[in-house]
Image 1 (cartoon, rainbow, N blue to C red):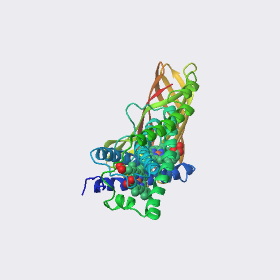
Image 2 (tube, rainbow, N blue to C red; image 1 turned 45 degrees about the vertical axis):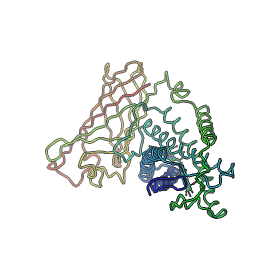
Image 3 (cartoon, rainbow, N blue to C red; image 1 turned 90 degrees about the vertical axis):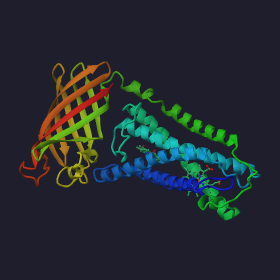
Image 4 (tube, rainbow, N blue to C red; image 1 turned 90 degrees about the horizontal axis):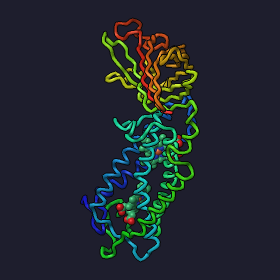
Length: 388
Ligand code: HEM
Ligand code: HEM
């Protein structure tokens, strides 16, 4: 039976419980592996996969959690098996509420962190690299990261107690608690309803305490950290579009990099500054030829997952500037000068630049040594909006 009764978990509640359990424990393990792996040139590809998988699973958990809660609200909750053990029943119910909330707080805080930092490791769902209402902002990313961490610890502790409880019921009490969730066994006295408001309140107190302490200790987004950057020459990119166009079988074909981070300093008075752009090469999209673009003949992202452009910024005249530096791409470092225009209005900067590169300088497409299928020149266009 798909539905619950007062003494039984229906199949849908059980499938959702165990699917989410596997996914969330997987996400925690991947998160731990991710933060414990030092990012080096050798393992950045591995790390990108770990975090992409972590994020993709996390967003899946959020979707399943919505379904689970809607379903749970439409169903009777099976009664506690030992309503006379009041403390134990209260503790178990409190843990259930804490876990329900974790199913939302963890994915949402992770997603906000991801959307705010425009960083590596895209989510593999075809949506959600950015979120409406979430600016590209280091302070947002840092705060969401702290919430994510604190919520992860809360989840870990609660889950340990939850699993220990399940094991105790199976091995010590030898009752039907676990088999009621695992196999849908019928158990309990339907006259002894559970569902104490006090347990719900206790879980809310736990979450408000954990999240409140985190925010008070580390600051709200846009709080303390912003004061340090205001007035200085530091700019935070809020939107970056990095596109490249190449002639393919005689017609122009354009690709994009979805995950680009930039670190920009610029002093409007002197018109000078510096920029470091880091491109996650695995985030390239090029329509139907995305896989070829990533492959060994072209960007070879498995060997060279990251490209970096490091340059000094200088004003030429008015809005006209140049970024003069080095582009390291597919293992080759080549001097590149990119002219660009820069418009600054209040605390928002809009830059727009383009440069023509020759793919042979980077050894890209070496096996296509004439222009019959892929042209030599590559037009690169950058549009970037940053705020101070
Ligand atoms: C190996 C891991 C797990 C085991 C052995 C386990 C075991 C159980 C058992 C036996 C129940 C039924 C309790 C009862 O009838 O009173 C239950 C309920 C529940 N579990 Fe788990 N669980 C595990 C993982 C998780 C995870 C990862 C989560 C979510 C983060 C979770 C969330 C819940 C919730 C919210 C309930 C209450 C369901 C309801 O009554 O609506 N569990 N679990
Ligand atoms: C089921 C949901 C999730 C769980 C249980 C979970 C758990 C964790 C854990 C335990 C860590 C390592 C501890 C730490 O934060 O320092 C972590 C890190 C991280 N998670 Fe999640 N996560 C979830 C969903 C997500 C989602 C949906 C995203 C993004 C879309 C995300 C992004 C991240 C990132 C970027 C880190 C690295 C943080 C850092 O470098 O400090 N997580 N997560």
